[in-house]
Image 1 (tube, one colour):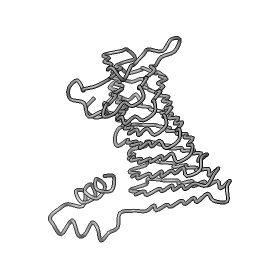
Image 2: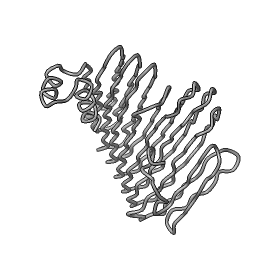
Image 3: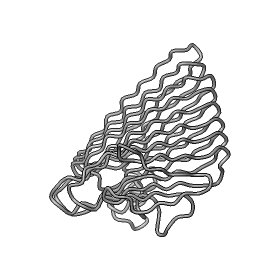
Length: 297
């Protein structure tokens, strides 16, 4: 819980804790209600219009080897809200069987609402079983809404496919900040498809990543400008050892006033950076870690 949701105690506000495929705790508020789905695993989260300065925590923990689950969580967010939503999953696998959590999150963001969404993934355990996370995020944004998404995976996940789609109406704004590190023989695929459907809509999708050892990553970001709008994607990556990174930009301008930009920078840590830090007494390994920590923020 501390790693994936910064929780060291029971949080204030609404929350839903899921541990090893079972409900482990739930709290609602006057403005935020959480309801168990019928007929499928997952929850519906209802946030009343004009809800401000509240939070929802819905972390998942898997600590038994061999668990494989798919969970469907839908967020219905009213107009004029200002809310923080914290999700994420941690898998601790000390066994011989693979453990896997696939979370499908759908957000329906009301007019003029502002949402901050934080999703962290973390893996640990010394077992031979893999730690697998395949999140799917769908975002549907009404006029003048804002959604800021922080997507982070820094350690321990053997395989992940992260797929995000978003549809924006007039003057809606989407900000995505992805931070990712792979090591060993891990693989990670991040896919984004953002449709700017309304006049004045805006999207900024930025990924910062590090591929170490023999790991590999793919960043596939597509922004479709279907109206007078602006969109930007960016992939900034560091490769180390035998790491591999593939960046696939895709821009679709379907309106003469759609302004779309993609940037990519992939390379190794500059030698002069290491030298400067090593003159301060750091070893080469310590200097590398300092640079990586600063790069990933």
